Every structure is written in C-alpha cells, then in structure tokens.
Length: 145
Image (cartoon, rainbow, N blue to C red):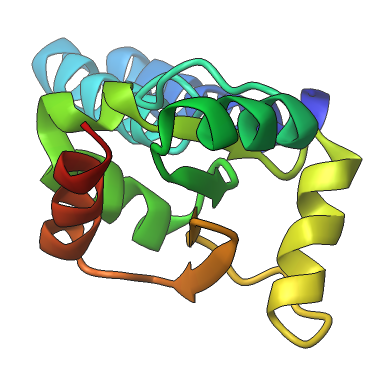
C-alpha cells in the first residue's frame, strides 16, 4: 500500500521545498503556482484517479458472473492512467485490480505476460490483452451488458 504513495509524497515534498524557497526569495505567486503543479502531478501519479481496487480472485469471480472485463493496473503507470482517462465514466463498470496491492493480481499479470508485470492488462473471458485501446475495452464492456 505504501509503495503506491511514495512518488506522490516525494512530489509534494519537493514542490513544497521549491515553493518555500520562492516565498523566501520574494515571489509568493510563483511559489503558489509551482506548488499547485506539483500537487496536481502527485494526484495524477497516485491511486486516486482510479476506481476502488479489489483482489484478483474477487475480480475473476465477479467477471465470471457479470462478464465485465478485469483491468490489472498499478499506480504511476502512464498507460494505465491513459486508459482510465479515455474510458471516462465507463471505467467504473470494470473490475480494477492494483497489482502492487494484490500479489495474486501480480502473479496473474506475470502469467499472462511471459513473467513481466506489463500493465494495463485487461482480461476478457479468461483471455489477457496487454494495453488495449479504450474503444476496444468499451466494446467488450458493451458486449457484457
């Protein structure tokens, strides 16, 4: 759990230190703008933009019942963030598994990707797809409805 917050925490600390230096040098407006940029970067690189994660076993069970895809992801992954943003509101209908929080999820991703933890990996009907287009994921989601 802590692993996901290391980069956001470092971004906020570095931004705070740089902003403090700017305040002491007499430019509080620039300090506020710089701090805002670092806080936004921290938010984007945190787990916050993603729907609540569940365990891999629970996600597989739910997917078997409702047919919706399972998305394996990790915080700080720009490709995962891009998929999440492009899916928009549809992302909440998927089953999301954070591989840094769930060892079974990480093992499932390694099994599907020749031992690599390549994310996002989307599993539809038991078949893994690495870094699929958001349109394709949306299409798979509409088929399950």
